Amino acid sequence: MRSIILLTLFLIPLFGFASFPIQTTTPSDTIIETKKETIEEYKNRIDKQLYNKSKGVITTPFKKRKKFIIGINSNVSSNQNYEKNQSYFIGRLIGNNFLIGGNNSSNEDIYLITRIYFQSTPFYITAKRSLNGKRKGNYSKGGFGYEFYLNKSISLNSELLFYSFLKDYDQKTLTSITTDSQGWPIFNHSTEHIHESHKGGIIKIGLQIHF
Image 1: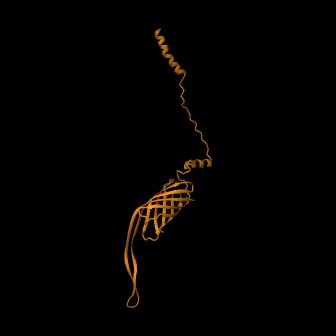
Image 2: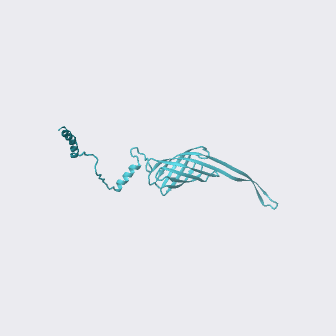
Image 3: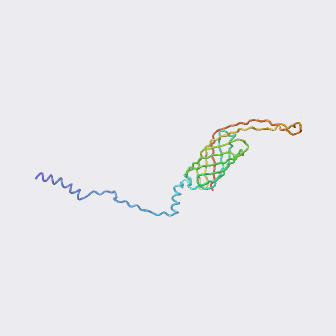
């Protein structure tokens, strides 16, 4: 009799679990709802991703850049005699990542400028080479730049550049004019070899307008 009672007490919990299965809160199926998006909603969503509206500052650049840029720059150079304080710039984008333009500096040098942007980021590499000016010689610059957009049409621009200047040529100076035995003029020159070389760094900060 005692064995029957113990066996009954042992089987009651088993029947209880079998009759009342444990329910879990994990759903057996997941229904994914899809919602069609209009073009206007898509543009608004992209705008929210590109701009920080609460601060009024654009944190990432436009994926589609405007075609023309004009700007003014000021700089600090390791040799201010070869890089004056201000320069003016105009450029045009070819495609979305390559820019070609011109730059006129305070020392009357004119530069050909190229930029290559890193996809849709505000970073770019740049190269600049003098075309003419008061100084005879090869003047080239190269380095990295960054654009910080204030709104859709205005950005702050900063560049870290390295420059190289080389002047190496013979300069002839007319000293006198004489005549030979037949009376033909003879032009006498003195020749001076000019050699000048400079290398250094430039930090450039500017304001740009995009249109």
